Image (cartoon, rainbow, N blue to C red; front, top):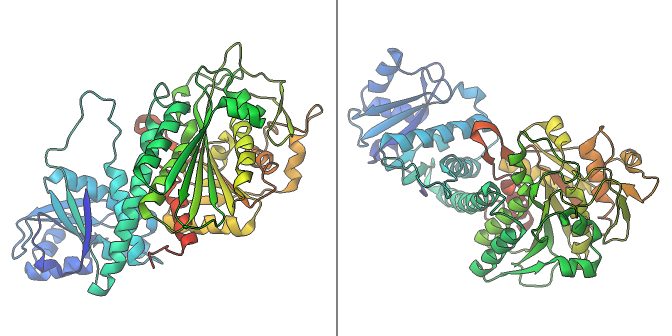
Length: 501
């Protein structure tokens, strides 16, 4: 799909389709009013007859509107004008793109980017429109023998801006959106891959491909032999029951051109989580291929970063591992020695992500990071607390937490901060080791983050629990590509290029 921006009046657009909005109750947007005047009331006459009410998501495709140069006019219901919010705007764009894809229009000029969304500027509206369009058009069919193709798919869409002065802003928005969308697609493709293909070695291969595609990226792989030498006993224990070797992929992006301290993103990469000896229930276990959503998100963010070529030093860590039951698997009751030297009593082998991450978080100390963000499908408790709408955010550093919350608001990839009070640490006490790997039924997301925080004392750190946001289940099962957009926005903000200035 090709995206562009232009500034022009609707009556001068010669296109396969022109897209304008209609509000409830049958109120034309400014652009639609202009078309109505040119067509001598053709559109308003149709609305009076009840063809379109203007409810959010309603569509009416018109052909050969009098005095209009475009072949088609698509009227899009936008709901009540004063109630048009960010979520509704994205939904309208997605539905519009899907509708256009079915009309036979191979290109279109869209004026929905001129709609008023409270508190949002033209950069945000165009960027969100492009991201929403790419998201709506995504499908994972690489393993299907028969692929469904639209009859005449939409190939180009142009978003209109009110004045020529806003063209550079719109062009930056498109460039940023395309880079982020590419990262999201990478995340989705890797996460959706079945676990018989996507194992730790596959993650490592994707990291190497990224390094081969971009000159300022290098990748190193840490295997089990090196983990043994480093004393990563916790990480190694989790993967012991699998025939697939645990591999940690280190992706270094050198964009600053100096030795400034890097930002580090650490992604949980459990390419399949059976629960180990503490075996999960069979229903829905196929979705445990998504337990590497954190690593997929980090890989996607690194891809978007490389496309944007931001002036930062960033390191992405994909903590690849597979948690399987076998005669060699680690057990409840085992006591593990982590790379940090701290010991952990295993009470549940299905709380394995934190055991992999804690060693990865100790490993990244060597980079003397500016800040570390770990991303993980860590706890079912986060799904209970926040559902599928918000990522859980916990941090020991308030400024970093505020940066991430701000990035989540800007990107629309929402997060919600949970407390990380010392009071919760008591739940992790063990009579036999320095700590247990679970803290009981209560506040599971928080106690998991408290566990990780014990390995992050040497740098500023934040934790993103994406258990509820990384994928959708049911008939629309698939990776969401989150939190690539939030992480990339965070990096854009850090680089001072949140809108390309």
